Every structure is written in structure tokens, then in C-alpha cells.
Image 1: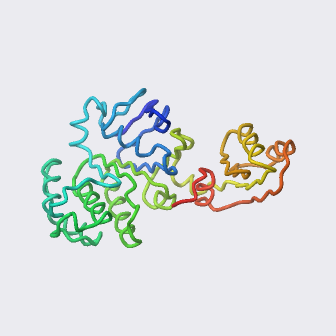
Image 2 (image 1 turned 135 degrees about the horizontal axis):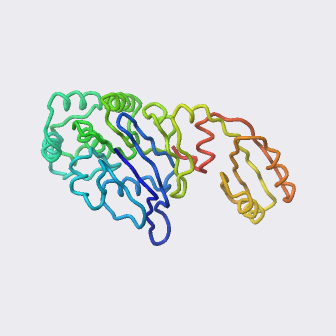
Image 3 (image 1 turned 30 degrees about the vertical axis):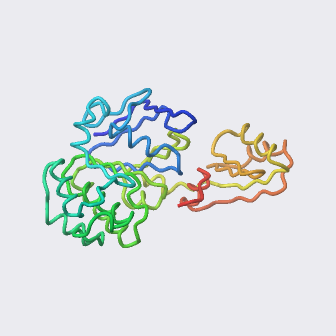
Length: 293
């Protein structure tokens, strides 16, 4: 249903994605995990045909996402992280407008969604606030019967009850045989709703596997304090993978014995070394050098 092969998009000054390959089949939900600026939103923009790739291909239903972008945007249920909604429109009128574009309005589904997401539909969008507009965007996507759904950071800004409701709707949609792609910075959100996970870091795919396998992954994370920032940078250049540098401190995630790490550190002046097994959520955050969720 969704397929990317060697997909790349570069921006002046950095960012974007490079050589990304992934696929989502019917009945699957792929969670794309990564810290801020990892390239998640760039991937979504390419899939929705909002921009042209510099290399590789992105296809939905076998159609080129940029070349057939008008068809893709009509046939795919999409919710932006921060949807643009005309300020004078009411929630109900905006949903009906979106439904006409995507093929029909289901008032019963709209009522159920609005109740579970705790949002009124009679007031103007300008009075809803950012979270209210986000809920409207999610409702517009989940109301349709589209075979492919793309949700960009759908859980961000919702409270715990609303997150639970959204998780139920996602699992329900997946159970109907729909294909879904969901971006997130939070491992637990993906574990609750998705069947597959793809982790991207600095625009590159670093891990792709079933969610069950990710839940069993327990990385060993080490915090290393060097004599100075220069030594930390030199170590990072030598070690290369799964390392982040913050001043004179380096964070390293490894899945196996620390023997090679210890041998490498013998070349440097190490002031402190703290490490051990951690839960998968903590390991994910440390692996990506992203402490904000």
C-alpha cells in the first residue's frame, strides 16, 4: 500500500532524509520513530506529494506520490501535526467540507469521534486552540474509509484519555485491513498502536522490525565523561554508531558486551563511566540523543 525505495530529500543547510526504504502492507500500522528533526515530517510531506524527492521513489497504491499527488491527496486520509483550518469555520462545517473532498460524511462516526476526543463541533475553529484544531484534523482523517491513513505526530498535545481513545480508533482501523503510517517521538505510543516500527536518525533508517521485537530490545547505555570536549568528539568520530556527544560527555548504546568499548576508551582520559541495562523506552531516547518526549 505504501512503498519507498531509496527516498531522499535534501535541504540547504541540512536536514531531510537520505536513502530511505520502507513499506506498509494492508492491515499493518508502521510507527516511524525519531527525535525532533530526524526527518519524520519530511517523509510525510513526500508521501503526500507536497514536495518532490531529490532521489528514489515514494508510492501509494502503486502511484507516484508526487506525479499523482492530486489523486493521492484525495484518496489518502491524512492528519497534519498542526492542521491549517480556516478560523471562521465551525468544526462541523470544516469536517463536512473535508468529507466532501474525500468521499462522504458519516455523522454517526463524527459524533462518536467528537465524544471520545472531547471536542465540540459548533464553535468556530479560532476558539478551539491548537489542541482543538489538532483533534479536528484527526477526526477528518479517521472519519473516512480510506485504505491508507497517514498521521503526523497524532498523540502530541492530547491528554491520557484522548490518547487512549485515539489508540482505540487506530487499532480499529488497522483491524479493518487499512494501512497506516504514524510518526512519533514516543516509543510507548508506537508499541500500543503499531505492528511495525522504523527508527530514523538524522534522516537515515537505523532500525526496522516488528514492534514485538523492539519491545524485547534492551540496549546497554553508557554515559562517558572525558577530560574535555575534544576527546569526546574524537571518541565519537572513532566509534561512529549509536553515540551522541554533549560537551565532554558521550552517550553510547550497544547491544552486546562492552569489551570493545573498554578497549577503545583506553586511548582516552575518562573521568567517569556509568552504564547498565535500561528499559527499552530509556534506551530508545538515549540511543537517539533525545531527552524530550
